[in-house]
Length: 209
Image (tube, rainbow, N blue to C red):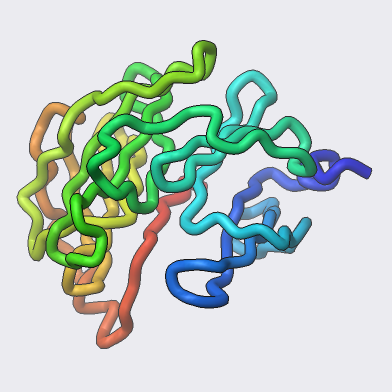
């Protein structure tokens, strides 16, 4: 049975990974869930994608990994690198699909001219044309960062606000909101950072149940 048919038994699915050695190799895992809380592995892949993000466009699944976008129709066969993000002088870290207020699917990525510099990251968004398989620069994402050097961005619309979660150079997850992508993201006052204690945390995701 095709892997996609197995995945369709679940309401949600995602790609995750386990690290063999930093930064590669890694193993990829397709997982599924019906409530967003309990997850089951559907398939493990012997190739690895670090920090993948998936979006479904007209029954084709696109997977963003760094500066590349791959695609599959069945999760058994993959076309790699069908779209490349611009800005070749930058390393792209944990690129992630999101929808803006107009319903357009975009990508937000952490960029850094020297990915070995943990204090050199900033955020940039890109427009994606899935029909013509192209990506173009959208804008720099501005924020009054509490610490700085944001990585692993996740943007979700909640009550007509853009909610942004990022990890920063203190290796803690921080939360911000903005009215629009053109605006400056402002920090949300909460106990989120303190609640993480001494644990290093990254790659946050917001799921609306």
